[in-house]
Length: 589
Image (tube, rainbow, N blue to C red; front, side, top):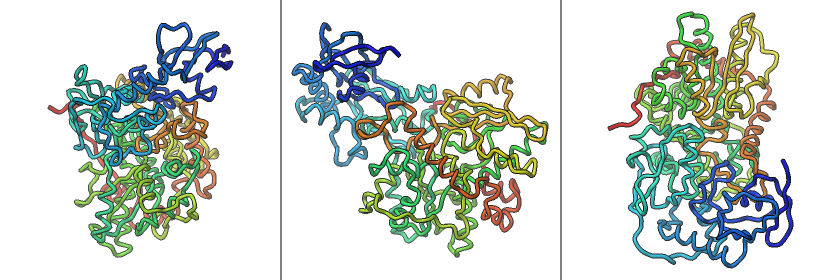
């Protein structure tokens, strides 16, 4: 890219042509206050006016987030007129904000407070009537509080960019404008897929996951046998909650922290992932062996994607695997197998899942996932919520010595289970086992790299004893829609498709730590996908370190089938580990 010459505060710099002033200034070591979602490539199109600067020759102050640099441009960031304008913009935002900072779940990660500090904004400079407030706490996954909303529009853009959806939008006009679902409905009465991507980009606490920490506390108070399981993506991001570098694997410290929080047993959801692969791979083989079966088969471990299918592609529900997601499978095994082994009544066992996902909170409430009147999972905490619990307990996370998961009866896992947390991981893990199940031989290349990476759609072919298996991987519903429309039109060439709701997969789930340059000054995260790749690398490296890397070689899984389940896709396996789906109307009247 061509370089151009500009001056900032009188000093000369060379920057890439095509950048905005905001981007160029950051490359040159300046932080212009901003409420743009810079790290995710989304901008509020200058609506907040927080990033105003002075440009020589311009008729007035310009919004640096949208104003492109040009040859010879001279920019002043710290001039009195620009500094005063930025402070006024933030004070106006504060004037319509609830300012309940101490009670806010976004405390310490609030971008509005950050720019207020940078600009020197003062409280109560503009007093008067505030916009009418809407509060939505009905949904089990996401809460909405418009008293904190600053109308930046980042959630609106994220929903559209990731999924092609318009669940959130600007309602009403002028002073009465709020952000919400159409007609200001609650999330339960809208076709929201509960992925939490809107939560992950909200700069304030207007959109948050619905916390279940109190529910876990109550289970301890009641004397329940409280066990916990952690998803693979959590270990790749939890360290960020404590100032560690993005992508630092913290598996051992996480286990140690969970034990200090009082959980009776600490399990890895990767055991459930291995179990999912066994059921899913054999379901695929069964479909391939029966000409009248519905193909392509599509994975079902992403609850956001399942919600999307029920709302927008209910005619394709027969294509979905009937397998529950890994944490639901593991919850069912813990309550109906492990509990018996350790002498605990299933109703006295309280299963907590630590997930990178807000949609998992919704998933655990599905009646189709109940077995014999019991939920598989009783509470779901996001990675962020676990960080809060650890800090609340006074645990110095960074100084913890590594500890191992409990693996007495269930809990051992393979490398295949680990990579579930990144787009393409479920496909790669399934192929390792499906190849063996069909041929009786191990697939020579354990790393199926064709399905790795962050391209929106990846496809490949695998020759298994002369039969060509066509596969595809998509993440984010905007990408998935391309594959789904082909299926609907009868044009799909694929036999097996993996779909993940969140862009990048679970490593970028709506419950993961916030990625904001303003809170991570020492991180190299200028490129949008850099943080995803760092988290993905943490999972791939753990897969490489595992002695056993194929789900079908998990010794505890073999024992589980021999002692309890029988064969994959047996009657008992279906009773415990499989589920069903239902068509939903986009809006409930």
